[in-house]
Image 1 (cartoon, chains in turn orange, yellow):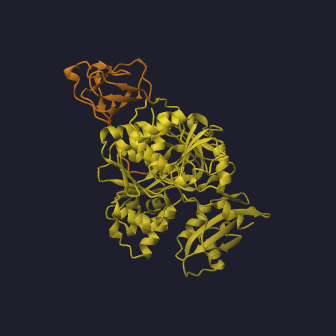
Image 2 (cartoon, rainbow over the protein chains, first blue to last red):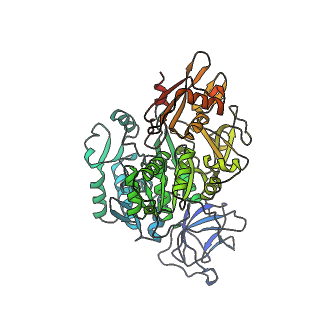
Image 3 (spheres, each protein chain N blue to C red):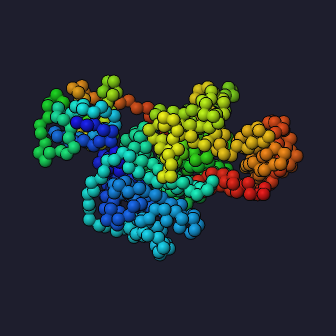
Length: 99
Length: 497
């Protein structure tokens, strides 16, 4: 799949939705063990039970090398994986409100 | 990638939370989101190429901003204070437009190719009409906002901000739903200013309630803070100066500001005595200085609350001077100081400020101002200290060149601001046969204070250098500022013609 920054994708196993911030083309991004898709199916598939640790709206998820980053824009039960590795939440520096 | 995402996420995560208060009326995030969806459909059906709000702050501002983004149409807020002639020129550049105006002005724009609607009529209609769902485009390079510059040096330029710039700025500087339900931010900057637009986007993404003050007045600002239990606010320097004066002169009890946790300021150079007095009067409040430009999607550097407190009482003069700094670059922003030939300068060397980062557009409709590998020349002059704190010395175009020597107006103004008889001061360059340019000085004395021309000349001669001594001094009752707090130097210059 062509993963361009700004691309919105949906989980096929839960309510989760993400937006790609950084990625490399042709990589595999899954939620609940199933490839994320442009449109969610009417009937959700059942996810891989090992991949159901949830993702949370507003959190940014990265791989260890931070070569991929996605923003969760809708929470869901599935967890996000990239090329087989579970993504973790990114630590961001908290800045004071400036506007 | 689309800025409408911010409102969609807020409506998803906390639909019933209060999103906005205007004139005592409230909107929830779901109501804002649904109104934006409905207005997006109207924008699309109208066939307009631009969406414009020519009005004070109201709920129509976030709704039109987000609705325009959903419809994929550039949002172009206009300054309602401009003359009819200035407005006609700008409106001719955004035809056909969907124009939202004060309800009393709907018949004032018959000459313009536009769908014109009164703000309140539109808002009421949106709340009562049936729900719609809009599918929007996710094009990062689409134009989200077009802002006309103030045109101090000629015809206003149209600065372009794309969705990717604004999304980078918000994701890089604001934590989603970082605010609690009790938090609110008082927005008193006008909606056609980049700070007014970024306040709307930041607050929505943080899920922090917006309290709108359409027409700034220090007493009203204070009472709204108290009545709405405001926790955050952003002001321009002239607003903070007037708030401090109001606190000093009236019987207003600073304890009434108990709810206020954080006060950010920017949009112009803050005189050090004003921020020092503010820190003394309001020691519990977290002050943040933010520096940014329209072309950089708002804030690029921050002087945070710890920097303020540390600087206030520090013995080390370099650290103490930081109250006059605009702070350090945001994590995703790079800053360089360059000389006239474009060479990078070192710490404490003054030159032009260049900036680079994903939030920097540096682009106008007429031309792209970015130079080598994405650097934007800001036309602001300044320097970095040895810990990367940035100091501004004014617009590069404001530098006075006297006999080949560059004089920053700020150098003279900072000295005078610190004098206890002087309320305000402006140094400008005037033509001089002998020197090319010479310094002219406009001075506002404090009430009942006395200071002679000779005393001012002697102060400058002893504290600075003889080249800084003004050729001519004019005493005046006040200096001209734009409504967003920028000193209008071109007006001051005309005083010496």
